[in-house]
Length: 378
View 1 (cartoon, rainbow, N blue to C red):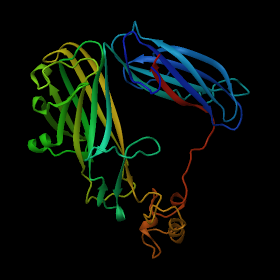
View 2 (view 1 turned 135 degrees about the vertical axis):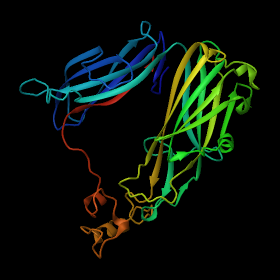
View 3 (view 1 turned 180 degrees about the horizontal axis):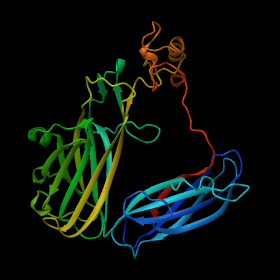
View 4 (view 1 turned 30 degrees about the horizontal axis):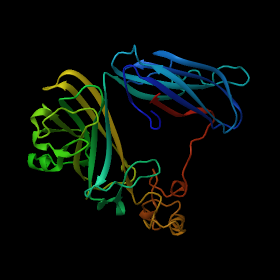
């Protein structure tokens, strides 16, 4: 299997891990690379866990990239969560020692994955209310535009979105009972009333020949938490739904949740506006009814990019000309008490119009760092 990155593997899979180093310094640099795994989905340093590979004194020219591939065999690994970590230590050209050895995290990148007994997949995507996929930003995240004149949320486009989760039995035994735990952030959520919840959620059984609505056979519960709403969906026995059979390999459960933003009318400065919201879904499936027999787990995550019109566009024109710069220049150096203050020019982190409104800062410093980290079944 080639192409996209994966975060779960069946016992027995051979996993190809690719680590990419990139030199962002000002000269040729020498680095040591350590690739490790540890059991559990917790952050760790490369000194913990089991080292899968160690590379010493890699010479990397200025602006050069180097990709290295490794193999992780999973036949002897217990089912459960794991953490991969890749660390690049830049070496002092004179002493040969590690630069800043007191920092145990250094240039460290983590990746979480799971070893499961059988294969199911879970994916998340977003559409508007007519099931049209949302446009994507430069990083591939779906976009919703938030209109915030003077820092007050007036509307979003689209005003409603559908969050879809697709669960597929990829291979292995048929699955007869399924539970899904969905974390919905409070800025994009659903009403808590029972009738509203039932109208906002639809569950489908999808085979190669048909798509059946099995919402009536699904137990649906919700619970408010500080972070938003936890939504629980349970299919106790798929044989007792209109589908009449367990989920065979190649078949899917498709869930849509109608979400509406909860921000309208709220006052948000750009200091408090969070433009990214994370959605997480845990799927637990069993080979027998009533959540018994062998079980498998899959995770699905999604990120929604809610773009405020204020940021980087003081006059909210979405037109790349000089007028936004002129607005910021005319108010440069002012604070709210000054007569020349213009709130449209302010997008910084302090109550002052300054260089933050005219440029994007980039981190300074040097070193070669781990630029890419992926894992797929070989």
